[in-house]
Length: 203
Image (cartoon, rainbow, N blue to C red; front, side):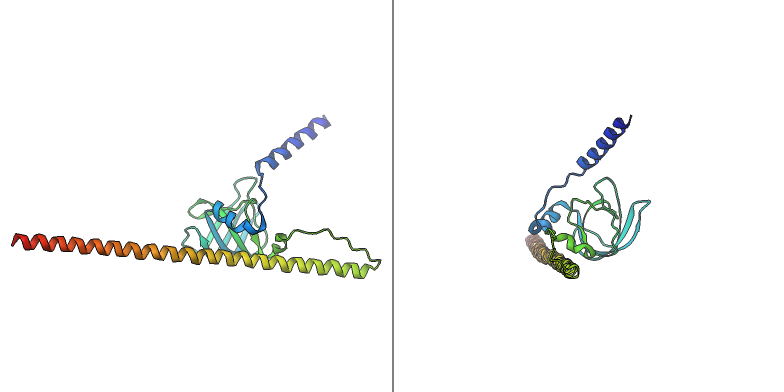
């Protein structure tokens, strides 16, 4: 009986692992991958979370991609790959839209809070054994601070890449708007000229 339970637990664990099989994304390409796989991308602040209902709420500080007019957006967990954000504070969010006002954040995406920015830096093995516990402890603390500093640098680098993406695409959109306006203007002029020609011929 005990073996059956172990097999069942193993199968459940295996199915959960398989249902959320995230591919490895290189650090340099995380923003471009996020842009390809997300409906909405923003820099925001986690306001509330409900671990029972598995819902949360973000304040959007800056929108980089997607269409959303309000500054507050709701989120919920829809599957095993969904993230229920716990770290309050600033986040870079890459999400899928469930509907016009609700998002889902996947653990396979590059969404990350500023508090966990050190997670962007791979941890090298820590082996300090100089025979002095105080010095070893200080070296570990220094390493953690260096890792956090580098992670924060990566976090703000990603934020700047998204801002650059937004600037480039807003310039492209402005060019298209000007082009559309000029085409419409030329059409109106041609229609006006045709009407004037027709009226003069009738006379």
